[in-house]
Image (cartoon, rainbow over all chains, first blue to last red; front, side, top):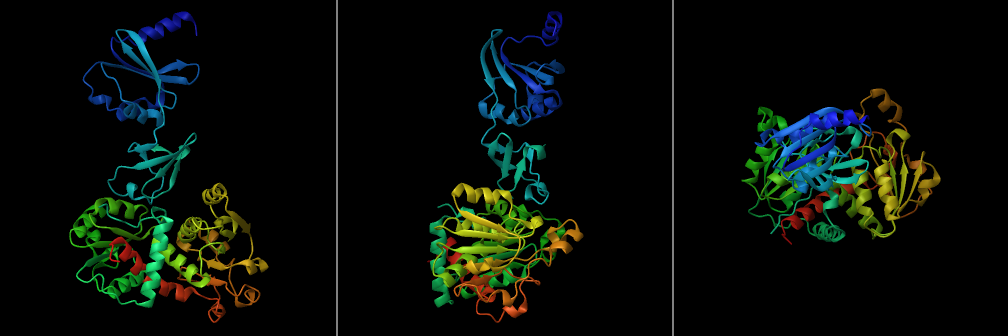
Amino acid sequence: MPDSFKKKLKLKVSAINNGTVIDHIPSENLFKVISILGLQKVKSQITFGFNFESEKMGSKAIIKVSDVFFEDDEINKISLIARNAKLNIIRDYEVVEKRVVEVPDKVIGIVKCFNPKCITNNEEITTYFNVISKKPLDLKCKYCEKITHEHQMVIK
Amino acid sequence: MKKKDLISITDYSKEDYLRILELAADFEKNPNQRLLEGKVVASLFFEPSTRTRLSFETAINRLGGRIIGFSDAGSSSVSKGETLHDTIRMVSNYVDLIVMRHHLEGSARYAAEVADVPVINAGDGANQHPTQTLLDMYSILKTQGTLDNINIFMIGDLKYGRTVHSLLMALSEFEKPIFNFIAPEELAMPEEYKLFLKEKGIRFFEHTEINDNINHADIIYMTRVQKERFMDPIEYEKVKNVYILKNNMLKDTKSNMRILHPLPRINEIHPDVDKNEKAYYFTQAKNGVYTRQAIISHILNLK
């Protein structure tokens, strides 16, 4: 990538004073990430961009949230759809901490059970999975006990 | 105190199994024990299952309990569109115990979360049917005198048959079982169970036909190939007649060997086997009543 373009890219998404930058989100999942983190309800300034060129991912999205710092439990929810997301914690325009997201041991809500005969697909029930493998991702439904594999995963 | 439910066979430990089997033997000696006197049990069969329902209701009656409920969803408020959640919330206000059967998988686990009283799963779709597993174990214990070192042949539909999966998990808690699987390729034992056995270091063998290999068996566990499990009726027609157990196949089998079947059978055990003393499936069904008396007593701490 030429330097001039890098500069331009930086300009496209303005820097934040304090808050969290979530980088390396697959572009197609940006809106799901926003929804999972409930960012539509956040009152502070949020900038996001997508379809940015990425050497590793082809196309990536980025979110910058001012004055919001996420707990691990909260941010790990996005690991299912943004496996390689990276967090930069910003204080006073400086990156003070870098974090990666991790697949949690339990996944509550977010994912649909792949089994059409599961009670969670037939009645208003929050899904609940125990993660039995993180790579590739295998989720065992607490209710029907069937395993939803990564390629079958549908986000609610 | 946390309420005890029975939703999945793996919810219980080996100690629980042994306690229930000990109680079942006690109920077999003395079936009429009025331990449920003054108690009401809900028997909620959202999906009809005459055999299982009658077995449970007999168990409850022999314990002196009263029963409320329905035998199919058509005669309940479900036909008016009531959710499982609301039905269970309401019924759990009335009774001391809920026995339920439902066609949706995971429905029993969910009901147990919603109800204030214990729930016994009498079958949730293709998922779990733990009281069947316990009565199978009781039948093995009674005929073999032990649950250790059992050489069991599972024959028929090993892919969709929930009873074989649960029995496999339960027997794996005991000393050195040997599993033999006989099924057509389309209905073979799923990888996840074979992996489970490998991880536990338990021996298993796969065969494609019934021949003199069954002469090593202590238990032959036959299952029915269920038409409703097949998307494609042609696939069902291809496999439905593959494994049929006939009396002349049994002449060199071990004297202690017994044939189990969760019933109903279609054609997988020829009627000429019924006269053979090794045919145990009808007694197995009878054992179901004692085992269910034992399960209810264990859950409600009646004994």
